[in-house]
Length: 315
Image (cartoon, rainbow, N blue to C red; front, side):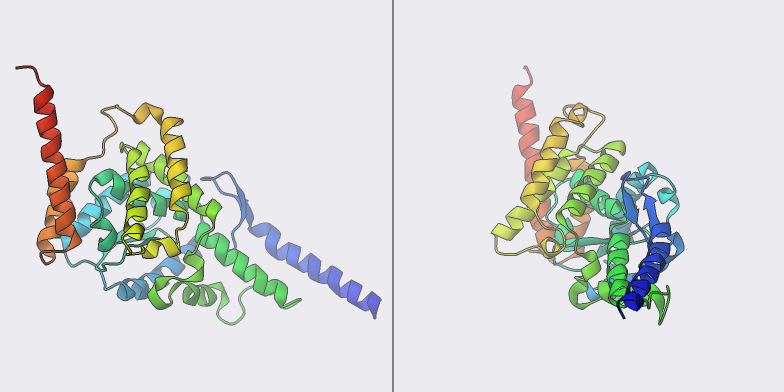
């Protein structure tokens, strides 16, 4: 019996190796060797399959082409600076009509952000930071890693029953793990290393597109402030560790990206964000919303800055 079991185990190990080894590739974005059991077409199909239900769960898209176009323009400004064939993915950037504070991405280039988070922002670099972070999740194939790990665990648990596909294949297993109540699916919950990696990639992309990476540092402060006010951002359930992430952003700004500080080529774009986005958001939604508050705050900051500059100007 022991000999039979040993023989079975050897065969199982051999089959497992044959199944998993071809899926181990070096990601051109991160340089890491990772197990990726989804093809490019499967990534795109997974994103297409899950985007409809997720959009619906968050109140649908904000029904304003100008606001949607602004978000898409900021996101697409960073796409050409992604690695390998990522720029040719069918990227989509969606502003969701929800007052929760959240952002997430699906494989294949589907990126989402709630207006609840957008309302908290005061400059375009903050928006670029969030979108860049989510782009980083896509290019680093973090969801793919979790699909592969989940599928691998199921395969191991099934012993020799490991043939790829089965009843519905990976896609049928993955979509329900993304699309559940509130969109907080298992596959969208990342670990510390994945979050920090996506942050670093987001800063890489926003800097390449001409944004001041200080926007990334500011976003973490926004999330911490929202949590301190008693309104825990839903994004923290899938994007934890804002203190650690802010520390990393600070180190990158002081080190690798020190050249961006006090450099006119890298901007926060406060005025453009206020005039083209926040003002529109405040007008589109009822008075008293956070969009109006953020717009007023950004306008007041601009007035203060102008007064300070005037005070320093020799007469």
